[in-house]
Structure formats: C-alpha cells, structure tokens
Image (spheres, rainbow, N blue to C red):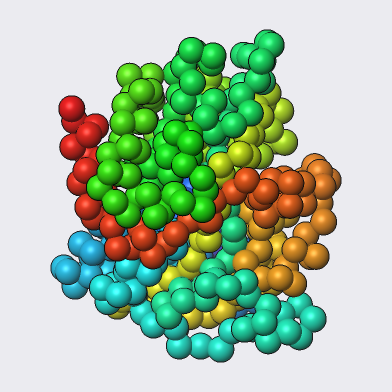
Length: 361
C-alpha cells in the first residue's frame, strides 16, 4: 500500500499515541508461586481485575521466604507491589516493617455479610488479606504400588514397606511436623513438642531415616513433574498442584490426606511499593468472595471466606465437582494439622539455620 506523506505522518502519529498510552497504562507487579497456581489466579480473578480497573497485572514467580523482599527494602529499591505469602512469612514481614499496613475497606460477603463474620478466623492480618486455604500433603504414583498402598504419614517414612525415593521441599517448615507425626506424636502435641530442644532433635532424627532417599524440591511445580518422570515414588506437594496433574493431565497420582498441614495464603503489599494505590485496589478485589471462588474453580484451594465456597461448584474446564478435592472438605480435613504460624514466626530463622546445617552433613 502506497501512502502519501500526510498519510505516513498520520500513521506515525497514531503509533506514537498508542505507544504512549501503553507506556502510561497503570500496572502493578504481583509476585506469586508460578505454574498452575499462578494460572488459576490469572484466570480466576486477575483478568477480571484488569477488565474492571484497566490496571495491568505483571506476574513474577518466587519460591517464598522474605530474603528477596528484605534486600529490596534495605536497598531502598522496591520493585514488587503485591506478594502472595505463606502466613508465617506475612506475619514476620509485618512485624519487621517490610509490608504496608492495610488501609482500605474490605468488601462484604457474597450475601452482604460483614467481612469480620465472613472471613475465617485469623485470615485477616494487620498487613495481609487471606485468600485461600491450601495444604501440604504427600502423593504417590498409583501405578507404582501394586499391592499395599501408602495410607498414613508414617508410610511416607517407611522405606522397608514402601521403597523408593521421596520428594520433599528444601525447607524445615512442614517437614518437621511430618517427621514428628510419623514418629507417633499426636497432632495436637506437635508444636508443643517442637517447642523443646528434645522435640526438634526428635524431628531431625526421623528425617535422618529417609535423608539418603530424598530428592529436594523448591518450586511448587516440581513435585508433580518428579512423580510423572518417575524420579520419585512419592513426594510432599501442595494439594492443588497434584489435583491439577490428576484432572488436567490424567496423571495416576493419589493424595494421602493423613497428616496434611493446612495453611492460609495471604496477599500483602511490599513496604514502599511503587504502585501503592493500584496494589490496594488489587487486594480489595482479591478479597471479594467471587475472586476467591474464581481461583477455586481452577485449582483445589478453598476460599478464606465462608460465602466463597458456595460460588465454586465445579472445575471451570472439566466440570469435576470441586468440594471433595478441597483441603477443608470434612473427609480430607479429619486428620489435618493446622499450621501454627506463631511458632514458625518465632522460630523460622533458627530452624532455617539448623536445617541448612543438617543438609550439609
């Protein structure tokens, strides 16, 4: 197509305007856990947030912890806005001044309930909004065990009855709890036991029994891939990641719910976030029951609001009924341990040092 000089000038002007509009479009950086979970959040409510507000969501992945955020805040060069955190890290980060204090009104429940009545206990913190319940469980390849199948947390540590390599996350959290429960400590005594030097030693002694057979993972997408590749015969994992592998990829995996450690995910805003107002709008949107339910229609994580679960029903892509796959489903939660974020907030640094030294031996 041949354009006149005036036509070419018009095209250039329009292109420049489009570039300027894109450059000036409001956006924010949301840091999350990647993989199928990040996809569930994007499909479940990020896209709706952008459609309603015009604010673009830029997703970045991380593997948890506070080290990266501390480095940004200490350097005065914060480039993260919103972070999807484990509850203990959110509480510690708030105490350390790494996070903004919440300064906006939370939306009502799906039926007009007050936020205080609709959110489950401890879901709302000074600096964070709880959006979902998830569990660390363990799963195995159904086709690997032909006769007896693993059924309890103790079976994960039984190399004689269930030989083969195990996958575990390269952190002390949850691994210490699993070890004590496998060693016979009742669920309601796990944190009291960990609160003593003898209890911590007991947990590490139990981990010693399988250490040589452990393949360590760091990102949530790794455990289902390790199982699929046959690198391990069973692995700890986030329940939603295993669910997606089962439902979307038809992988022959089975979740063992016994001893699951149930936790709450919180969204927080980095102290000094470069897009603070956009971040506040994002958290307020994420705190809607419909947003939490949106995630729960793509991955098996339960809403942190009571009115959210009734909005879910079935999986958005397969029509699988979601309730039986949730960590809060009564049959699944019967043998659950609720993560004690206070204990971990008080002891995380010490346990990380102890765990690192143990790994190096």
